Length: 326
Image (cartoon, rainbow, N blue to C red):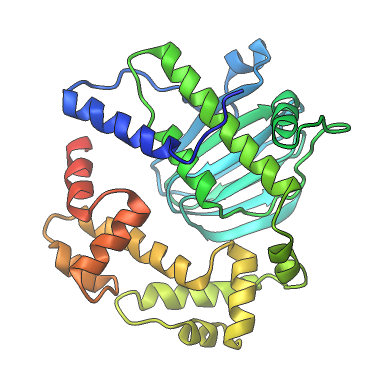
């Protein structure tokens, strides 16, 4: 079994750059477009595939409610590829009500029904993996078979940079060789499942002890915090400012915020600033420095460094590429 190395995402980016430099247009992707939310398609179901990849993309801004009863065969691993706003319910329990950042992952066990109300455009990668794949990854990681079926029954949102990079690698993978594309997609998919199995069975005990007793930030406090951040993106925002908007002390706020989102408050703030910057960059009337200042950065150099860390390229290159694609 081929498991992903830390260089896989960079390799995917390099391959995409090579295609662009050669002037060739990608002709195929290993990811199918979903006709129905969280459904990999009839071909994958009828073939009894152990791994399937599909992508739910929606550009409309009007609210849309969707329900999926859950596959009895596959775990569904969702990786959010762009920031969106939705209400997401898992087995009748509301997990999300509001903004979800790019890179957020969520795992649904087989046979569990989900419901979503999308309030904004969305782009989600769905990886469907059978019990055989989870068992293979477990044995490869720990050198012994798992007794019984592996069920990842914790539906909370996951923030994991490794999962985010692997999902991005899949999202940008295009090739003129369908066989090569499938080999790459299967390898990265196995790396994603392996990462999830490792998190489930070999999680850092220290972090677990740190957060086990902490409550998540209540939804009403979260809404106040997010509204405060969005209203002050151009200003200097400290942890104390965010905590005050939620009506909590800094230490309690930071712990509860991370419990609710999987992100430290500062990391969420940076991601939100970059998302806002991407929206402003779509308008060519705004210079890069103006965008930087409008999003709370005090210099273009700092803005460029943070933008490249989150997006993978400089603001100027991203703007040029986006306008060409459009």
